[in-house]
Image (cartoon, rainbow, N blue to C red; front, side):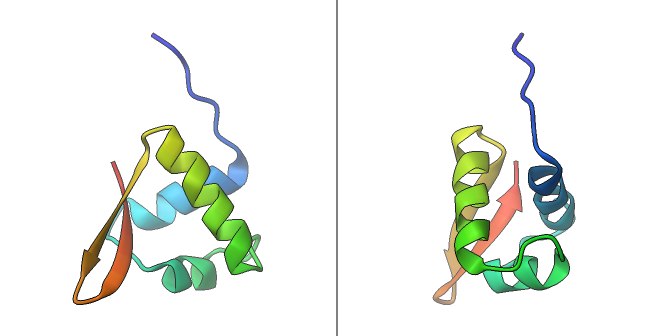
Length: 67
């Protein structure tokens, strides 16, 4: 079994969205170490590639949740 290594910022994002799905803006407001939305999008892409995050759309709003 392969161990997945996560950065502190990736762990922070996962900890924020593990309780309930949030929008990108809600995640950005809760994590002080991420100050730009493009940085958050890069982190989300990395986490999706590792199979740790899923996204869905509800009422035309995109939410992210931990798998």
